[in-house]
Image (cartoon, rainbow, N blue to C red):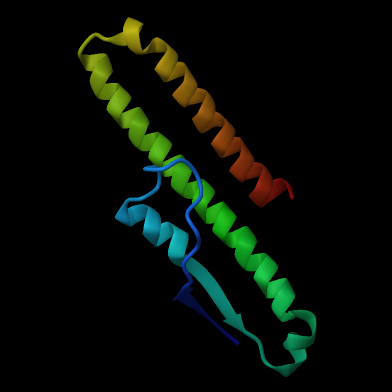
Length: 113
């Protein structure tokens, strides 16, 4: 049995203009394909492998969102150097809550479940 990556485009969902960059297309197109030989193919049917692909894509996209939130954190660090803490305080708080939720969700989905 060998695992290989293959591209399978996903339809874009979400607001217009969001997730249209080249890096988003790479994340949305990446998937896993696993070929099983006869004894394992009884347990790992095509429908089961499709479900694993959907879960993998979802978790990969969650990691992508986490990475983007960390990039926003880096941008916020530059605004703090400018002394704009008071005007960007709600934005800092929202970003931190979103990042915390994203990390906790990924932890729950990968470790607890």
